[in-house]
Image (cartoon, rainbow, N blue to C red; front, side, top):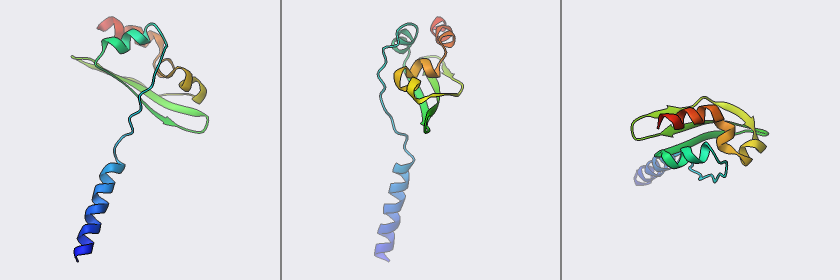
Length: 101
């Protein structure tokens, strides 16, 4: 009985760690408007799922007063590796968000 309780606690703790999202910091040198956007907002998240040759991604931007949740885009893995912000957020939309700040 004692071992069963220990086993259940061990399983429960491992399940909670399995659901934690993986956070990776991506470096970018994409320039205007992406660099300005990153510098002026509180938080920028690129949520993505990698497939064989493509990446499905979306950008979420959080400011002090509001939040923008982007639409999902499917892009090539090569483009995402080179320019993740530009691949997942159009230049026009990045400028619109920057203008609202």
